[in-house]
Structure formats: structure tokens, C-alpha cells
Image (cartoon, rainbow, N blue to C red):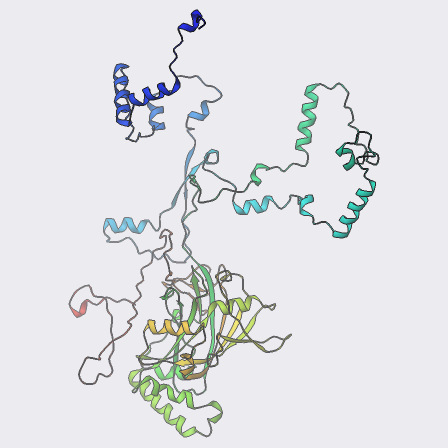
Length: 602
């Protein structure tokens, strides 16, 4: 065995496997490792941080206050200091859209209540951050800005995007094969020479001034000019904005709070006519969402009776205020869908008998038979006059119908005319609403139209439509609840025998449906306050109908509203012995138990 050299004798011959075994035995498991680390830490006089406890992040503002910068002004000093003029507070006056404020006057109020009321009238304090755009969370690339920037860009067309013509492509391939030389014809016999025809190929263009001596500064300047030529001014802004769901802090500047409105719809009630006219009929409109099974608007009551019919109620009805004469309403829909219906309910003066008996004359008498049935009609008018004199203050349900709102909107939006005339007949159904429209070009023709999905639920861009509802359903006495109404509305969207069994009442109701203008004139809020602009107080107004959103709307409450809607649903006397007649329900607000403590709530 050869002698080992002097330097090799000092080398340890411990193999790597033995080293790993020794280390694993010394630090086997995390507790032993932590113990050894603590021993080393105590020896080195350094505090150790437990691996199982979270460390609070450093408060940068507090650190900068307690450790003032000892560095003089330099190029990076602005990155670690907060600019003193970053925040600016601006007071903006609050806009009131009504002529008179809805907030009550501050007189003899509790201080807490006074402070709450002032939150509806005080000016907005807007905090403006001048250097907000320099932060990492600010992203100026919105979808609208992306489309605006891409308008002036030329369209990039690549060879792979162009589909080659089959005949031309085959001709070029055949010509290339004829011109190409084989391996045997080439001097070197290389594969490259057989593919590229060097004899017939054109030389590349010569590079001008290639061998000229040019200073480096001049070359850099030329390259800089070429990069700037035909370059988009916001090249990096063309990159699509990041996904909103990415875990990145968004420091977007909020808008000034304002009153919430959904998609607004203007409904004008033009006329209501029956086959016979013997008594006043009162109508109301409301929106219902079948899918959510909710009423999504308050009731809008309108009166289309003639002056002769109104005269029957003069002993009971005081002179009407101008606010009660509205025949146009603006509905707001925050969540439009294919399940929204415009429900029209009719009422009449309370009279003796069942609802079916009261509606029977309207189903059997026709306008053409008025002369033949003159005596019977006179008798009905005499009875109606007596009921109006005795019970003119009270109402009873009479009939109802519904309009599939999105069907009408989509039908009107697909036409080429400025306005649409649609006739809706609820008596004959073939799985959906039967709609007919008049046109001077195509004439009168019928169609069935059904819509699916929520893509067409746009109430801001359809053309105005005039609807003629020709039939109403007689109100069933045992089906007055909203649950029964939702079942009927669901049957209107699919073929069903339920509606076919209902006897229709022939009538003619004309209404206009159109997108609401942005600033309508002669408009009243749900609190009956006049909205700017309101030039003449004697003009018949348009009512804004308060929305009951189907789902929550997360917006701050910026408008003072003191309204409470009470809709009695039913009164059950089934378990009471004996008969119950002329039952009325009275709702009062009381501030004490004495009858004289009733509050004058209108």
C-alpha cells in the first residue's frame, strides 16, 4: 500500500451517509431542534422568536415618528416621507331634488334626533388625496378606458390569421416543387439546397450606411426616434386590467352618495272602458316578482271614471287634491328579470252579494245589446246608485289581470317604428301571451314571443309601446292572497288549464309603457313632494312609485323618508258562528290609549 501524502493524512474519511445519520440523531424532531436553537440563542444573548406565534407587522408611521431620518435630502427621500399636502378636505353642498325639503324643521326636538336629521342636510365633506394615483392599489385601467384607447389602434393581421385559398396554395406548392432542385443536382448534395432554390431566390435588400462610422450617441438617437414613431401614447395602458377577484387592495375613490334608483319605467294609463257602464271602477298598478315571490313596488291608484260616474260618490268623497289625480307613474326596478309582472287590479264600491254575483252582469251583457236589455241595465244602475249612496267609502275586489313586462319590452325593442301598439288578450292563450301589433307597413299580424335569460332585461333602451288589455280575470272570493296570485302568474308563463277555467270579463284598458326620462316635469316623489322642475302646480302630476327591492341594495341612506305601507291581507271569520256582514278594518296610529289620541296620519 502506497504511503499517504502529508496533506491527505489530515482529511477525514467520514462518508456523507454517516454525517447525515449523525445530524439526524442530534436534531431528531422539531422539539429537539427548538431546544438546541434556544440554547444557542441564550449563549449568543439574542432573544428568539417562537415559531408558533405570529409577528405583528411594523407600524410604518409609528416607526418614522420614533426614528427620525438622519439622512439628508436625497433622490429617494420622497419615497419614505409622507407629503404634507396629500390630503385636502373639500365641502360640497348637498343637492336637494325637490322644491321643498322632506326633513322636518328643527324645533323642540331631542338633541340626538336633531343630530340624526342633520345628517340628511349637512354638506358633504370630501377627502381628496392628491397623490392617490401614485399608490400601488390605484388602477386607472377600467373597461371603458380600455375600449376608448383601442379605437385609434390599427388592426394587427398575421399570416396565421389569414386562411389560405385552397387553389392558390396548391399552385404555389406545385410551382415550388418544379423549381426546386433534387439532392443529386446540387453540388454539395445537401438537404437545404433541395428545399431552397438558391438560383431563383431574390437577394435581400442592402442595409444603407452599414459600414459608415457613426458615433454611438447618434445611433442611440436614431433608435430612440424610430421607437417613438407611430407608437401609441399609452402603450402599457393597453394591457387588460387585472381581475377584480384578485387579492389586491383596491383604493378606488368612492362617488358622492346619492339617492338610489333602479331602471326606471314610465307607465301612462289612458282609458278604461267596459261593455256596460253602471258604476265607478277603480284601478291600481303594482309590480310583482314571481321568482322571488315578492311585491316589488307600492300600489299606484288611478281613476279613469267619467265625470258622471264620479258624481255618484260626491257625498262620500271630498274634493280631490291635485296629487291624487295622477294617471302616470314611474316605477323603479333594481333587479329586472324575466319574472317581473305588472299586475292590474280593479275594485268597485262595496255591495251586497258574492264577488262572482257582482261581476256576473259584466260577463253577460254586451254593448251591442244595450237597447234590447235597456230595462235590466237601468235596474243595475239604480242598484249601483243605492250602493254608492250608502257604502261609497268602501271598496271590494272586482277583477285583475297581469302583463309580462319583459315580453312587452323585448317585443317593443325589436320593432323598427318609433312606437308600438300591442293588444293583449288574456282569454286565449297558447303557452304564452298572444300579442298583436299594428303597423302601417306590415299591417296587423299576430305572433307568440317568449324570452329566456336575463340578457334582454333592459328597461332603458326599448321603444315606447301602447298596450291594449282586452280581458280581465274575475276575482275569486277564496283566492285573494298574494300566494294565489303568484300561482296564477306562474301559470301565465307556461301552458296550463288553470287560467282557461277562469271566466274573463271583457274590458279595454289602454296604457303606454316607455323608458322614464332622466328629468321628468311635473313629477312627485313617494312623499308627494314636487321634484324640480315643476313649472305649474295645476298640471296633472306624475307619481314616483316607491320600490321594494327583491334583494338588498347596499347603498347609504341619503334621503329622509317617513313612510309606512300597511296592506291588510285577509280577515278570517270561518270559526265564528253566525253570519258576518259589512266587516271593515280601520288602521290608526295612536300616541295614547284614549280614543282622542289618534294621530292625523294621511
